[in-house]
Length: 136
Image (cartoon, one colour):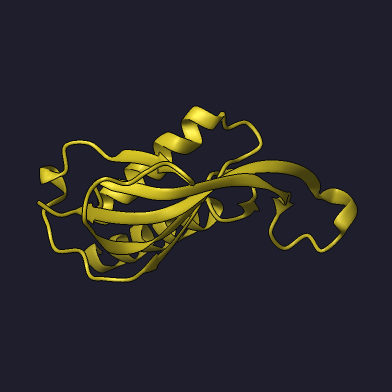
């Protein structure tokens, strides 16, 4: 009886988690390329500072990774930049330098629907930069 109940719960959980991946293009997309292993406690990172391309950098740093955040159809610039900061912090970076921005076309719809007419194309804002750890 307990085994049947456990199997039923597992199958139900798998079914529910599968529902979350049926749609694509409706959420913020994060890409991170690791350049060095995280070597800190995330709780120790107080704030992540953003430096846009061309801004002077007056500190030494260690590169942690390349990070890119692409917004969804409804994300504002502030929301995308906040996500950039959050993701950098998770990788033990307290700054993101050389930030560039632009636009990219994204498609949203149901994953296994191969009919392009059922997909919506929209232009999404992205921000990308180098996640770094400031050195003392």
